Length: 136
Image 1 (spheres, rainbow, N blue to C red):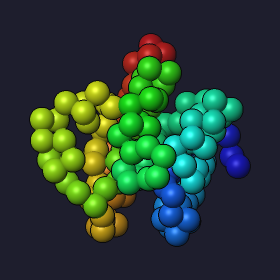
Image 2 (image 1 turned 135 degrees about the horizontal axis):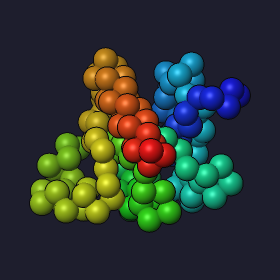
Image 3 (image 1 turned 90 degrees about the vertical axis):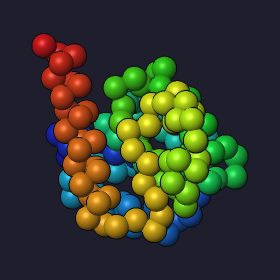
C-alpha cells in the first residue's frame, strides 16, 4: 500500500458492506477493514490514527456511536462517519450523543453513492485542513 495515501477504516459486521466500501475507496485511500468495534480498536492501536473512520451503527457488541465515542480522546483529529438505517434525528433527537462522539456526518442506508463520495471528499478536506493547522 502506498504510504502517501490517507488511511480510511471501515467498521461493519457485514462482510459485503466492508467489501463494497473497500472497493469504493481503495484507489484514493489506504483502506483498513474491521468486522467489529473491538477489532477496529485493536487496529487503531497498531496502525494509529486514520484520517476517516466509517462505522455502521448496528453491530452486536456495541453501537457505532459507542465505538466512535471511544476514539475521540485518543484520536481527536480523526473524522468520524456513521452509517445507519435511521436518520441522525431518529438516532439522537437532542444531537448530544452524536456531538459527544464527534460525528462529522451520518449517512442513511441505503445511501446515494454520489452523496456518499461527496461526504468523503468533504471529510478528507476537513482532515487535511486540521493537519495543516496543527503543523503550522
